[in-house]
Image (tube, rainbow, N blue to C red):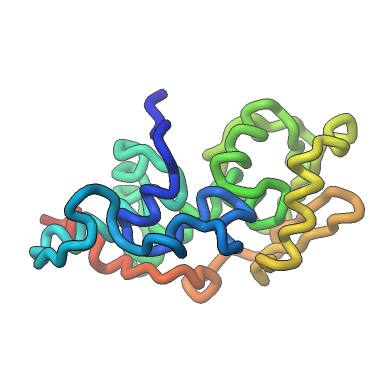
Length: 208
């Protein structure tokens, strides 16, 4: 499957905001976006007037890159959200939040969504007592996610647990770090997503 393999910090600079793609580094002074808060390239410092389409495209790319979703997958999520009751933009973000890899990242068992996705694929986690290896699985209220006992000494998982105190766990999730276990208390709402996203721009882009 195609994946972006270049410097991830360039994505944050291109989108003009932190996407938190490199875990704890994004919270320190070493963050490339803190040092160079302008787009990469020779003309990065130049001011460019953006069209309405460009603004919508950048918002879509920002969200897609933040969650680590390929273009085809992202479009499928939009169509699912559009067919659901309620506000399409809100539905889209909630579907993305309910991905298993995102939940593991939110619970503090990985330093980034990309790392969480890799750990899931290696079968590190169990959900409701069963081993899972599909990052895109949609979680439901009362689902219990835990690190398999034989994997609890993996350094990256323990490092991530130290970072969660600084990053915080959303209210719709409950983390039991001592037992390497997390519970989905409720469905996420739009208010639970604090990242600056204007989902209406994405809806306008795909509605054309």
